[in-house]
Image (tube, one colour):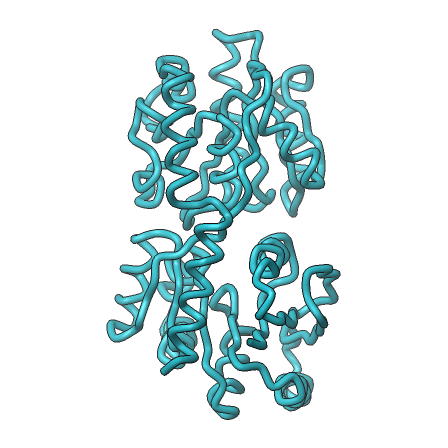
Length: 342
């Protein structure tokens, strides 16, 4: 089976290709908008659709069509429903290549609500997809709100279990430094928490457009000795921080099931999550994590009321049942096989 995996350059597409390479009867080619090193594929291509020049976009359209035609995949799997996916879906339709699409969160939860144009782009991708996967029921409902006839499957990007280490009084967060992930709010909440729990620290991984602003905020709050910015982390470094952290916090405005949440759960961290639908699919508030109530003066305090050992065991069992890499890989492979057998 020859599969073309297309999507944003970055860790999620990389991890997906790594997960699927365990099948000997599958050959994966990777296609992204920006050059991207992916050691888990047989070949890799990059072509951008971020220009505002119509002639450039048209030229790249035909260039992309030629690339896909030469690859001649049995199936295309596009990750994240954006304009790149829209162009790929048009080409897949013209070349009669089955298309699988995977929604990432805001692409179906927020973007279609912006205006009629974005909704139509999303609808076009959904309509042309033989199957659309999502990692939360909220996303599946949002997909059906845009295109009710869409065939959907609940499916998660799987990961290997990290395992817990010797825990420290550390709160860890590692989402991108962008407004969507509300890292500034996390710093504000930690500033309140640390007033009564001075032996704790906050470790902020990752980077992004807001990094310098966040560092300035920490300085303004006199938290430089309690907050650590690590910058972008390699997997080994990231895993080590999960193993040490007692608490993992992530407060995006909207989300699907994030890889980082699954990693944290597999490492015995207690999650503190926003009050959005997907959080309730994984966390029972006060039992195996905290659904953050922003009306409370210091909502992170709630995590200290939890039985850590019990919560860690619950999260470990949840992870093994729903998100371990072997389970996830088999689910995606079954989707491929069912489409190609039609």
